[in-house]
Length: 223
Image: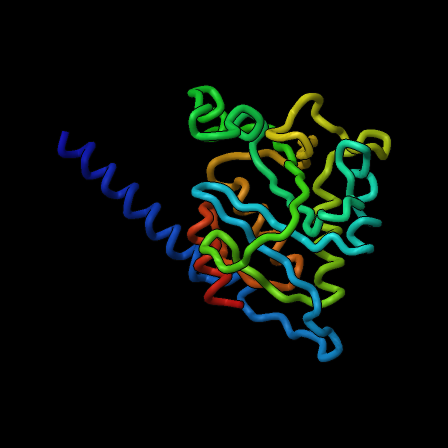
């Protein structure tokens, strides 16, 4: 009994140490040198929930052009009230079957704790109030936003060049789910994908950010 408690304590301490190190050891280790001509003229948002993060990028003309493959009557990229394209990556079972905590089921949780296929969730948003704890804003330049758009676009699975939508999947009328590249697990999940996306935009994150709280802390420290 005492031996089991000691092992549990050691595992807990190890996880705390890894989480702390993952938060406060930066990636990349050396801050990238920004070109003097790269003016930070674009706003992007990190949207945080209790266990999940999304990225919102401005729906300007270039974003609409890059993501024109998403445009259809049910997902109108050119809607006059649409200001943001919101994208998140996650495990297929948990993401699709748990729109709210009330929908929590054992099997999606088990898949999330082991390994699961991944999906992308895309949505359109109007005005987003930045003065709230769930929203972290960053200003980046043209090149950084272009790399972020490409990182997201490259995360879609394509079959013969066509994206792979998941039929009848969505939380609301407009949002959509698509097959995504990569596999989800508890150690390298939705928030580590978000961190990689932010790094593609020239931002620094912690070395390992499995939780929204650690990701928010690290981007606050290093940006």
